[in-house]
Image (cartoon, rainbow, N blue to C red):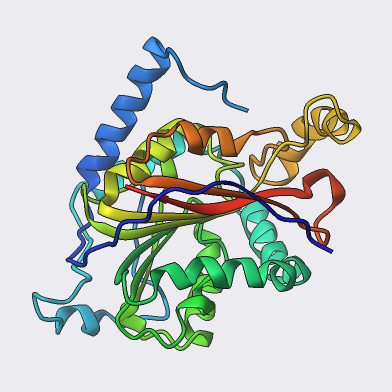
Length: 308
């Protein structure tokens, strides 16, 4: 049984539609800004080279034949290889066997969770219907959210993840969702250094992602940067249990181990506080719930939307 409580509701502006481009210089700038922020950090909440590729489910001729008005533009750049070095400064490097194992686990071990969370996701993704044609999903993983775009032939999705082993699973999910090959693009990258231009996305999606980024504030700043004015950020995240509770005590003990076995995932982040403090000018909606198909140490969740 789920318990839900709405903690904050503000206004929700509409979004607009235009083209999107890949911009390695944004990655370099994001890295520079992050390093500077680490030096002069103040008034921040305590913290609890992206390479690109055509999705293997696509075909190169789709892009070669594309008209200039298509939302997706070619994303190759001579400087793209430099962005991989940038992403490695934000995300812990793992051997390929670990990346493959983690991708396989997400593809097979999250089905009960996805079933329980489906109603929440469906209501969130309804906010994009008819309003968002260019979407970035941070931490796309194996693509469990792509099915919520089924039936929307106008939507084009960038699925970004630091683990390149996720690509084959995400492409398969895109196929199963009925997405056209040219409407889904996998990008290897991190939320702290998004390789897209300012004001280029109608929507950004992150589910079970902010728990594992190295810098939540930097990631939220990047999300705001790439969102168009009036754009929407959708999120679902597990969060720390209540301070002083038995669950929180256990989370504190297990947190270091969780970061190792779950690719940097933190158990004790108050992600809702970061989102509240991020300064989304259009308002923020944050709801609390508990997900029982997850282990009890990561049962508390927040979900909602924020508007630029």
